[in-house]
Each structure stands twice: as C-alpha cells, then as structure tokens.
Image 1 (cartoon, rainbow, N blue to C red):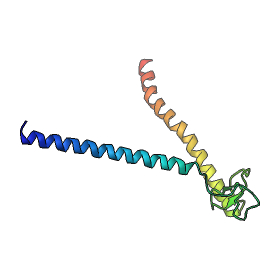
Image 2 (image 1 turned 180 degrees about the horizontal axis):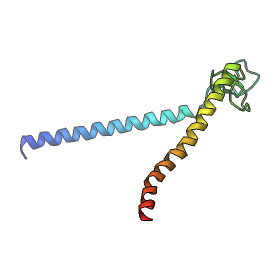
Image 3 (image 1 turned 45 degrees about the horizontal axis):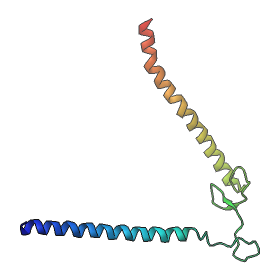
Image 4 (image 1 turned 90 degrees about the vertical axis):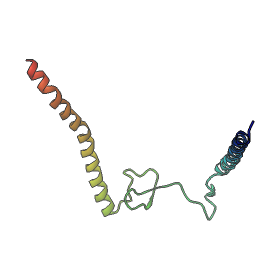
Length: 118
C-alpha cells in the first residue's frame, strides 16, 4: 500500500468519525428538546395565580383577545366587523371561482370535440 492510499484511508476514517460525532451530538440535542417540550407552556394552570391567562383566541382582524366561543372570531368593533364581512365576501367569490373557472375550461375543451363529432 503506498502513502497516497494510506492518506486517503486516513481521511476517510476521520470523516466517518466526524460524522458519527455529529450524529451523537444531534441525538443528545434531540433528547434535550423532547424534555423541554414536555415541560409545557410555563403558564400557571390555576385561575388563582396572578400570572394566569384564561383560555382565549384572538380577533382575526385586530388580534384583540376574545372568548373561545365567539363566532365569528372578531372582537365586535365596527371596523373589524366591516373588514370581516369584506373578507368573507372575497372568500366566497374565490370559492365560486375555484369551481367555475375549471368548469369553463373543461367546456371550452370538450364543446368543440362534441360539435365536430355531430
């Protein structure tokens, strides 16, 4: 075995050892991350605590905290109500367009075929 082959084997062995060390480090970090996730949000669960935050959601427009059961999910402010109505109209228009546009394209493709066959 010449010195060139020996050097290549040495570099290959060092690379494998480095990769194995990186994998071990990732495993350790992963286990640490799992233990941190299990600890929870850090917020107290008791309503008697001064740091307690009641379960809530946020207004989709201004992000003000609102009750969980609020439907629609807006705070009730006039501006938020108008903006929510506009967004709902746009969403409904897009839903209709999502079905109508492909239907028109399919008709444009199939109609000439059917008319030429007749």
